[in-house]
Length: 422
Image 1 (tube, rainbow, N blue to C red):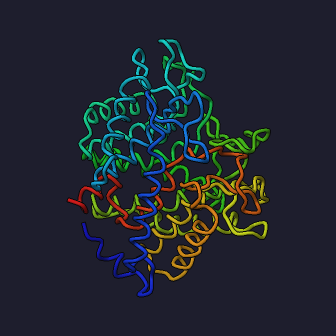
Image 2: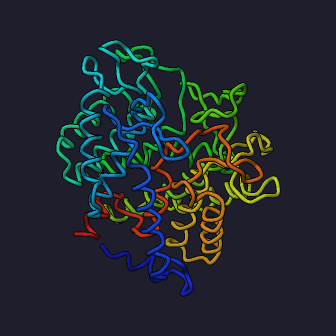
């Protein structure tokens, strides 16, 4: 599928116009895919160490398994050898050992011998990725993907979606009792991506409408009211929890304070949602692009090189003071993706500058040419660190960063690849 208007808006000198740059992106993406292939284990996929090896007694992780299934499904749609069998393995794991066959839904890890896993709660974050994996696998024609998608969307809608609030609920006990007293921006942010994919695959516009409601609540209402900072932690009655995880500032999913990397991640999701709405319905709220630009500006102001060294740091306090100076790889990937999306959408040279700056940073500090993959985290001096993230478990963020500039803003990854490559 062509993307004529954004292509015309790109500066003449843009890297996105250059065939060598596009080949470089494709090559980096394929290197990441090859590096992560050893993550396959019997019950799904597990986290790799810094050398790309499975640690002793490695066990499947459902979130990693869903993300791997999504990525390898899209890669299979591009005709890359070895990817379709891995996508099929992921679908089988999500239909089998990672699922709760008694109450429905998915556990974070396999249930040992029919007993509950160590953490048995059903989490919206994981279920969003299961639905994303199922959507991508369905487009790729992976065996069992249709069944997985039907199950995932049914569970997601029945238990997690709150029609009254226009957001997804956070977590439950295995039998869907004991709803957590929490409303979180992170799980809902990833749900926006999944809703767009589900709408493309099922043809049901309700999912796109839900993505817009989520963005309206967390960004156009709450973040806009906070001068485009993105508070993430709320109680079920929408009281902001400013002290949430104060004693756990390096939590990998719900850290204390605010996360500039999420500001920029929301930025490109809003642009993709705008494009999806325009493509499907011919109209989209004007605030989507306005808020996207403001979020990118605020994210880079509050997170980039705050301590004198390049890189987007992990978290800031409520007054903007840095809390965790470490630079997770996903923050850089999402900032680059946002710069690319804004560049395509607006043609402004400002975003070309950031696009180049971020790729130069990633290439200089994060691409591991000795051991493979990307270094997952750097400290404030841009040296390898493992305070928040150990090993090289995450393929999802880095790989999507390499393919996003090659695709239009809409439709979603798997559907776009099927149209472009078909």
